[in-house]
Image (cartoon, rainbow, N blue to C red; front, side):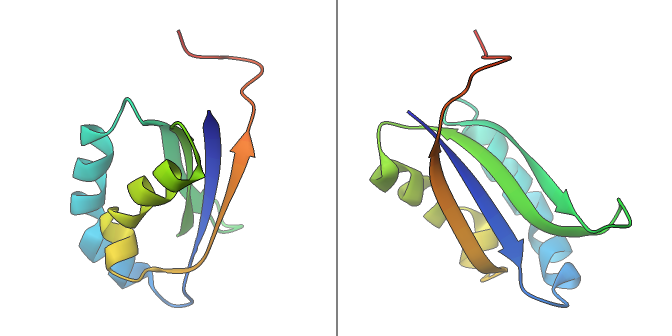
Length: 95
């Protein structure tokens, strides 16, 4: 089952994001079977990172929450809000 996670950064937290980015990217690379695609959400300037979006392929919501809980960004308390929703992949489904 797929879940989409929308994670919004706390205000004025770009330095916190950047200081944890390398560990976050390493975590993502180690979980490519579970984290199917992901990337930063951007401010209206199209440059400044203000959050994250991840699509997870896991058996249930508890498994999605467990994957997200181990993300270095989560452990650094970067996010002010995290929304996780079941999601159906329709077009561009990975093989």
